[in-house]
Length: 95
Image (tube, rainbow, N blue to C red; front, top):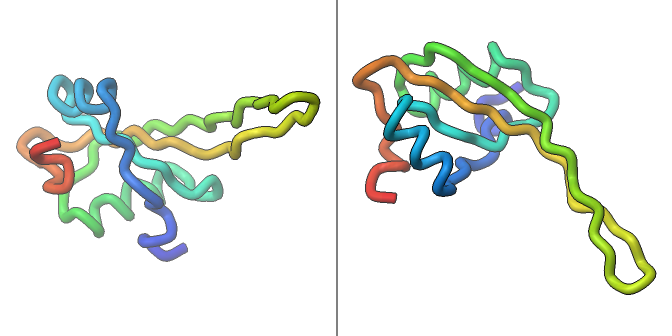
C-alpha cells in the first residue's frame, strides 16, 4: 500500500495537542486495512522522523437519528504514533 494512502489526515484536538507536548505522540487517521508496521514506516517516510511505537484503535461510528430515520456516522481507524526524543513533525508546530 502506498504511504500517501495509509496516512489520511492528522487529528488536531486538545487531547492530541497535550499528548504531543507531554509524550511526543502524534495522532493520525489511517486506512483501516493498514497494520502497525505499515503505519510506522509511512510516518517515517513522509515526515523523515524515527518512530518508536504505534498504537491503533478502531473508532466505531455512532448512530444518529433525524426524526424517524436512523443513520450512522462512518467508522475509522486511529493511530497514535510515538516518536523518538528530539523528533518533531513540522505540520503540528504552531497549532
